[in-house]
Image 1: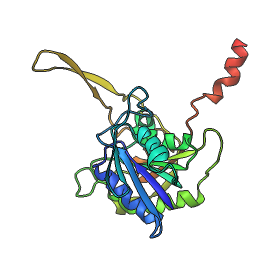
Image 2: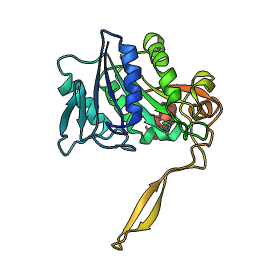
Image 3: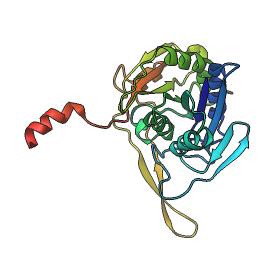
Length: 261
């Protein structure tokens, strides 16, 4: 199996090294793992592409490339430049430092990388490690992802639903904020929504007197609806969420049509 990996935390992020281990285990001794990741951190860029300026790409080592662009840029570079003659069988994005559950999904560059791969017609999985009091300060905050990731991805590849529709399915995986030994299992869960916690901005004055705004995140320990992704994670479960890039509110189509047509 040939696997392309990327992330949004940057080419030197520890989570990318964890993903490399997961991909190497999955690819097997005869397989190949190729890395095309952002040269610098790209957290919060969602599915952005560098449409109005070029992306510099550099080969750092065997099968290892850094691109001055977003995760979606990196996937495009991997598919249409680095691996243009030998496309990958699977694209993995992550392992993100922090969760990409609930509303975080909409901002996530990790998700953006997997989404671009799906739009390009390839199977794709985004992986993220939830942080919390039980794992954030440990020697290996990524332990849950490191020890459970390969088996989970293999199970998804072998038994997951992989359709070939226009907006084909891809997967969002979040590992819970606990040590690996405390992971309770897997829950297939819909994307949740954290109520009463949102991104915001905080103003600050620079030494030169100019006014700047820092984007601030909301609380991540707020559970979502029972049975949804962040609720499962906070209860100690790995969440697996099938996703599509189609943003249509299908449940509203008929009502809006009746009102307007």
